[in-house]
Amino acid sequence: MGAEVTGPQPFPKYGVREDMAAGATLERDAELMLRVREGDAESFALLLERHRGPVVHFLYRMLQNQAVAEELAQEVFLRVYRSRSTYEPAAKFTTWLFRIATHLALNGLRDGRKEKGHQSLGTDQEKGPVLEVADRAPSIEQRLVLDARLNEVRIAIQELPDKQRAAVLMHKYEELDYSQIAAVIGCSESAVKSLLFRAYEKLRESLGHMASANATRGGRANRG
Amino acid sequence: MHCPSQSDHGTEMILDYLGGRLGRAAASRMERHFEECAACQEAVRSQQAVWEVLDDWKPEPVSADFDNRLYQRIEAEGGRRGWWNALWAPVLPFSLRPVLAVAAVCLILAAGFLLRTPDEAVLNTVSTAEPVDIDEIERAVEDLDMLYLMGPAQYEEDAAEPGPEEEANGVVSVWLGRKRCV
Image (cartoon, rainbow over all chains, first blue to last red):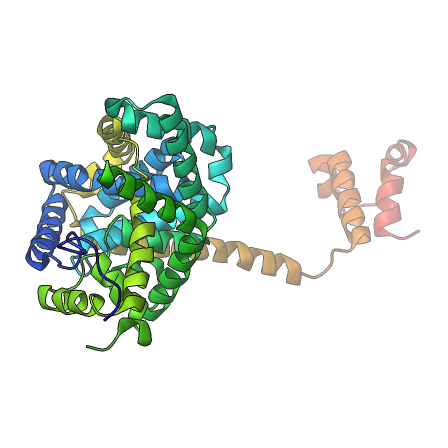
């Protein structure tokens, strides 16, 4: 009954969560932050090492400007450092961290900081994909196609309302769960789910044609 | 299992499945269901396709000097706050410092109030004093002038009649004018 699922393992990379690893990470972050509270600078360096990338990448995808994203990420870690003496591990460290980051990002968007930044959307597009695919030495045509695709993704994300965008980025890229996203954005879990479903629906509408093209390309590659 | 596409939580279940947020058993149940349900397969495929497109958007690497810039900012901030912390650190634990700040503010306000009160008392005193009669002041000044012109010797002759010499120099006329009302 129903359509056939292609391949021996239909969804091999999805489905199972590594709960124990997630729990251990949580404890580790809280433990490190408590050590920072005691004045251990090395623990702060470890926290920075672990979370620098996710915070900068989240802010970059929110604001679509690398320079502004790094500036705001610095502010995030500066605030974490300033608050070390009052830190209590009541909430997950990442929830706290992303709450600061989201707050700054939403304020940044509101203040039009993005427009003030000198790098336009186009400038970033030129930088990112070229660096990303340089090793595989794509042809000019491939590069242009890739640039155009990434541009569409960026625009689709940018067109989402601020909170939907934040929710999608935290859910898709940073793998925060609903309760964490709710705590970050400051709404209920059901409101977060509603935000996410609406956002993904919009993305399916705006990026659906690219998904079809992907499938066609993948099929051709498999046959080749 | 219930078909996710027929459920209120269908999208959530599919998102959780694609996001790897389901337990092993739940994921296996979903996969068995997908093999039999075209609607769910389509929902999963479309969502999975969008996620794969989103996966193409790789972030740029973080600048190499990110940490250095951050530590410089922390250091600069530490320098600005250093004297304050150095002042209180040996005396008070950090948790009591806000209490101290509030107490200091209260003390300043109280001191300001106390210092201000006497001024108000003075102002009140002045404002309730009786108005001064200008004529009376003029008379007092004239009296002083007269006493000055008379000199100490004239006081001794206060009860005596003025002599002709004294009348001639006009001093006595003033004296007579005041005392005898002539």
